[in-house]
Length: 228
Image 1 (tube, rainbow, N blue to C red):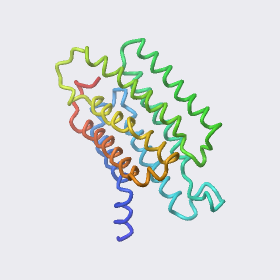
Image 2 (cartoon, rainbow, N blue to C red):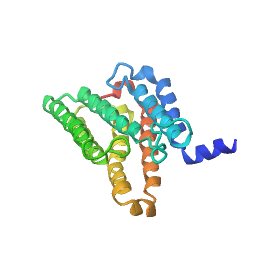
Image 3 (cartoon, helix red, strand yellow):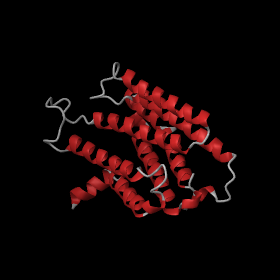
Image 4 (cartoon, one colour):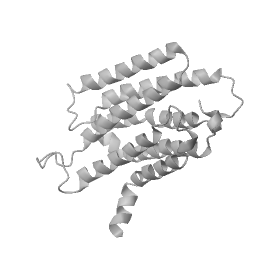
């Protein structure tokens, strides 16, 4: 019991991912035929990634490397996750956007982001380091894509409030997180003392809660007619 409480206090985001997935599944019928139809799969993938990352780092016998210097390294899991999650959201906005020019920009942005990951592999070992430069590029491309979405919504005639639109809450959470997380990762690797002294890990966890909390609120309060 004591170990469980310690785990929950130190890794509270992991059960939160699962809770958000449960809520998303409970409301799945309200968005199953939208571009977010794979949303629950993404949320479960996030949860499983975090669980595997935890086991690799803390449980003996579940490691990728036999060398004791690296046997706790789990970063490759998160590098793969970054690529897949970015492609997922690029796809969602590509499906939602109506303006052909904007849809083309999403495709070009996705190609640029994947190229950034490909190039980063030659300068940063993805088995031991986060590809944080590529993460930064892909994150800000995603924010640009979301800005295109907001631009379309601004001129759209829809009598229903945005607070009932699942994409509004999803977009809010994504922007809130991706605006800052690449800078936190950069500080973690390039300025570790700054990262530790200013408790940037705690800030990162708060941003995760904001993002997935926004996802959950959107799933709970949204109306099918307001989706777009």
